[in-house]
Each structure stands twice: as C-alpha cells, then as structure tokens.
Length: 296
Length: 288
Image 1 (cartoon, each protein chain N blue to C red):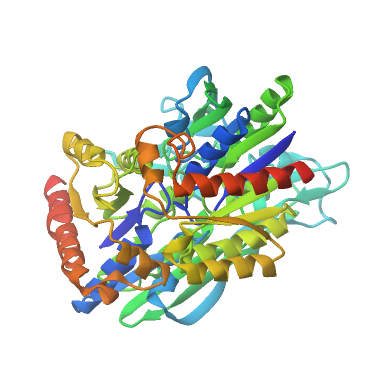
Image 2 (spheres, rainbow over the protein chains, first blue to last red):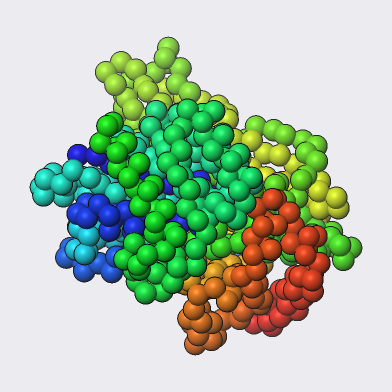
C-alpha cells in the first residue's frame, strides 16, 4: 500500500482540484482529506457519510465555581492568559477559563489547592468515513478555533490506512494542508511520495523552496508540478531549475484554464468535466506520478 | 488600530490586500506597520522589499533536566499533556518540538532538577519598506509550533497608528493567535465554491472570538454570485471587490504591488482603507 500526499507550501495553488482529478483517474483509491482546518475535497467528491465520530485530541480546563475559593493561583500559573478574572462587587475576583486561549496543559488543574478545576477530554472536532464515486474517503472537520490539528490529521491517515488494508486497496491519495507546520508535518511523515503543486509566482517559488527543505528534513521523495504555468513561463522555468538543483523530479506543467473553476461549480473533477487543456495536462502529470509511486 | 487580514482558504489574496493597504496608507502619510504572521510561508517581503535592520532568534522555553539532581520519579512526564518529557528507568528525555512551555514540569519536580532554557524555533526580521514599518516571522523547517513565533511578530507594531497583520490560512491555533486582540478582521475570499466554504469557516472563527469583521471578494467575477448572496443574507459587509484581472495575476507573479504597477486600482484600496476606518471601526465603537 502506498501513500501519495499532495502539498504546496503556498495555499490556493490547486491541490484539491488536482487530488480530485487524480481520484477520478486512479479510481478506486482511498481518499484522505488532511486539510482539516479548511477541507474542500468533499465539495467535489460529494461524499455520503457512513460513519461519523467525535475527535478528542486533548483535555480542557474548566473551573468548578462552587469549589473555587478565588485564591488566584491558576491565574498566576497559566502562561497562556487563559484564566480570566471576573470583576466582582466586593473586590475579590472570581475566575473563569477562556476556552479559546486554553492550550490544555493542565497546570492549573494540577496545582489547584481546592481541586476546583475539571480537566476532562475536550471534543476538538469530528472525523468521517464516507463513500464517494471514486472510493472510500476519510475526512474531518476541526472544531472552530480548536487545537490539535496535527493529531486529527494523524487520525485521518491511520483510518485511511486501515480501510486500505481491509479493502486490499493499494493507493491512498492525501489532500494536504498549506504551510510547513504541525498539520503539514503530520500529513507527510512516513508517506511514500510527495507531489508539490506550485504556481509560477515569486511567492510560489519562495514557498516551494521551504517545501524542498521540509521533504529533505523528513527524507521523503518528492515530485513537483507547476499549475497555471503559462501565467509566467519565466518563473516556471526558474521553479523547474530549482527543483532539479534540489534533486527533485519535475512531473509536468498544467495550463491556466477556466474550466478548472467551471468543473468546481458543477461539483466535478477537472477530468469528469470533459476535454480541456487542464484535463489533458493533469492526465500527463498523473501518468508520471503513478509511475513513480509504483517504483518506490 | 490593528487590522488583521485573514481567510480560511489559502491563496485568496491576503498578502495582496495587506501589502497594498499598507502601501496606500503610507502614501497618504499615515504611520503604518505591516506584520507578516504567516510564519510558515511569509510572502509579504516579496512585495514590500523591506530593508531589514534587525534580525533575531525567536523561540520558546523548554525544560533542561539536571541528571545529578533527577531521581527519575516520573512526575514531570505525568504532568506533561504533550508527551514532550518522558521519564525512562533512569533518565528523562525531552522532545523540544512538542513542548508548549507551560512550565508544569519545572514546578512539579520535587528535586528542583528542571530549569527552563531558551530554544530557537525561528527568526524575527524587523525593518522598513519606505515609510512602512515591516516585521516578519519565519518558523524553522521541521518545527510544528508557530504560535510562539507569531506572538513575537505581533509585538513589533511600534507606535504605528495603523497595524496591518497578514494572517496564515486556516482556522486553528496559528490563526487564533494572529487574530487575538485585533480591532477588525478583513476576510479575503474568492468567488468560487472552495472560497465560499472556507470563508464560512473563517467567519465562524471571528464570531467565536467576538471580533468585528467584513469581507473583501477577490477575483470577484471568476465563478459564482453565491458568495455575494451569502453575505447579503447574513448581513455581512463586503468592503471591496477586486476583479479577476490577468494583469493583477501577472503583477503578483513578479512580486509587484498592484497600486504601483496598475495605478487605476489605487482608488479601490484608498476606498477600502477608508471603509475599514469609517464604517467597520465606527460601527464597532457605536456597538460597544
């Protein structure tokens, strides 16, 4: 079983449009949306949810007001400004926890002399197993302003692997998040191949350079493709040169094509939307990527 | 006045809007700062070409265990909610990247064997782009936690009257850290189904955080009218629409500012800045 993860560094370069097209071409594959902050793959794959579970990545503090003596130790110890004093009439403040600021470290609960702070598992989000027209899909929704996105990503991947094993499917396609931090690292560690999708802009190039370092840091093979390459052929060449200098393979160029947005509006992958320059280019990229992942 | 520019989805034009508002404000003689809080992939410097006057290491505190004092009692690893400190049979292992610097282990250690030491996780650059005060954070590759770096960037506004904060994409901890204490949030979206889906998530974040916000629609004529219908139904103000102009995409690709390369767009950004100050913040003051 192989895991292909599509990331980009910079956001909005076309990861999800490419993953949904790969899903149509690979059919069937297990699909995993690891952009748990702002998942979009479901907008194309239109999944039917068959299983829905709460996700708890950690605990959260809550002050039990009837036990609290307002000694203020929690306020003093909390390094995240998450213990908020309430104004009170007699000048002795009471305290409450700001759930958004709380990191879930539990220091307040541990040291409270009155055991007046509850520290129980928090629900940080939901995860789903669904059926789609291209295979089973595991996806998730991190709660708004929640912590632990990395853990939720790891959870999504573990489940996708389980399904692949049960159904004896040999490919998992992962739609990754933007950036280089916690959820990205959780998306790529131990994967078989990274496809970095970039765009021919100085920002795209700058961010891709950081992705080269990331792939090297975690020692994962990587390919690069330039989406909307004809917007700036000069920078496209620069990107491809940089890739080669970093011993990263170039697996094609995708033309700028309004049919990508049109397909999105019709809840279709670019491939299903019919013949178009972008569909033609994505098919060529897929040939290279699927060939490479079979070799690895 | 702190204005954060955010979006759920990446690539909708946060940096374009941030940099062009900062440039516009400076050209009107305002004291303005631009702070790039997308510390995983900061791009503002590409457009603002800042002259960096000061660069320093930023990071967080992690525990350092004195093996002579440690009795391997295990209390530190028990209190750590992040598995950053692990007590083995006769030694304690620290995984620095996982440490949230809560200080629990230091306080719980009965032997006083743990002290906190600074650990580098990134870099902070401060400087100027013309009259614009500039700061950006850069998280080191392989680091998972951006909030400590974001916190340091946010302290660099100086005495500017307008502080433009360029946020990372998403809806989780880095975004929350960036938006905290903002006077207003501008959510940048594009007129596609992905843009609308992620805009709704970003709106939820600003609502949970109780922040004043309004929307800018980029590539406004690209896909659908749905985003306009949605904002209309929800009573959400759209402060500006930027058209899907290939010349803007090309200027962006070369790292050029719209207001500089395509002066016909200057009034759009002047009006946007005016609406933020006049409508958005004024309404906010009236409501509170």
